[in-house]
Length: 132
Image (cartoon, rainbow, N blue to C red; front, side, top):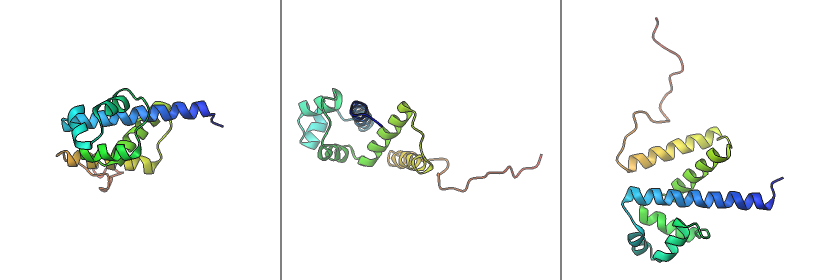
């Protein structure tokens, strides 16, 4: 059974990973604290405390507002943080989680102007059709 201190530690790690993803998207969108504060109506000091110094967690309302300002779906940030947490804690992904991760990255790449050479939904060749 997981004790309360371990759960709190996991929650803090997840919070840090969400903040890291927000910073990644700020860089991708060319935003700094001042412009993000202006776009969201969230004070620069509050953004700095929560996103950069992880002093407390962001309310979902603020996270949704930040995501809207960065033009990224909130589920992309949450999913990326969840996947990073799984990598750090060694928890394996299910097939459905792996597929969702691939599709989320594909969607984000497409929105950023990139195209994939193959799509996860394409037919997968499992046998070599060429004879030697």
